[in-house]
Image 1 (cartoon, rainbow, N blue to C red):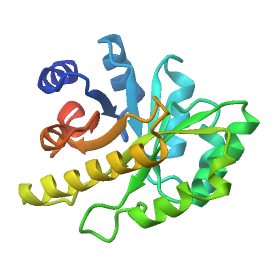
Image 2 (cartoon, rainbow, N blue to C red):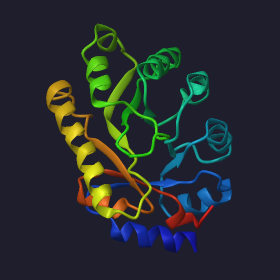
Image 3 (cartoon, rainbow, N blue to C red):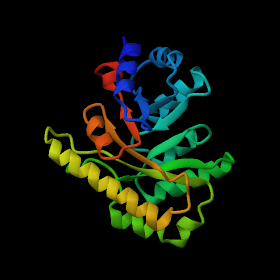
Image 4 (cartoon, rainbow, N blue to C red):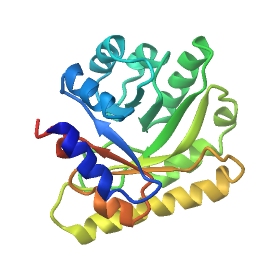
Length: 219
């Protein structure tokens, strides 16, 4: 069943869009099933759950941390995490840099922007990101590599609003790329779109969609 769902979702993807199968709250056995079907990128939002699954599953899985990350939890995932989507403060980025240095790694990260109407969603404002990117302190970070941006649209039936919010994030992506990462070929990811809105996200230029319930069933 979940294998069929995986292939159905993959059929809907625009060329060049990467699928992150969001496996939070789902057992390792489900992840193994999709791994056996060829899926390698999985997303988790809780550090402890991610660590537990990392320990029992194949080591070539690409683990994406997609939830809000607390600074005191970074050390647990720094040795192996493939991409941290939710970098929503300079303090967190500095902590990731510090723990990556201990592991002799450069950890890929996405800057999370607050684009939704809800106050509960985390993320930078554009001005906050600019201030960070223009600081000497940012330039000195040697163990993180910014691969792009991430954001979540409002949870709403209003598709026009969702389009507008994803357009805003796409604009941020282009502005930041042209101003700060013009010569960094790694800065290419626009992570936006989940089960309910990933089709809209792809229309607005998403390169990476985070799909959970459409594949695994509702939680």
